[in-house]
Length: 190
Image (cartoon, rainbow, N blue to C red; front, side, top):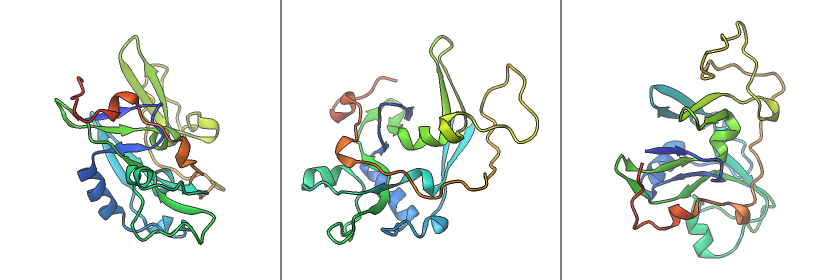
């Protein structure tokens, strides 16, 4: 089960899934120099496929908070050294073990929302997505504009010249996840 949530700072996923994703992603160089060799993550929401490139799921941190409890919450590789480096790159994932009747819950937070412009339509209980451009607005369609009633889920990939290649800087001490997700014993009604 997946939730798209603007109140979650990272991508939250169950510990068992996190371990598998980290193995698939592989090591991330502390200076982000291997972004081009990291895989693109693919999510299927309904019948739509969403791709998240490394620039979206990797974050740069400038100061590592101390304390094993906080480190355990994030996907910090065991061999990562923060003492020698003023800035380090790491996956923008956090652990969250939450169940629903549809299975383990993932939360697609800010990394997903920075990459996909998202409209939440509460009246029709729908979400609409489009690749995000500068300023978190939908990218311009490269050729023909969709009709006024078309869904914003036009997901052709195209690269803009001069696009910033570095992932965003994240302050781990201000990372949040929803309060309801902190109680792992309660099942989520979805």
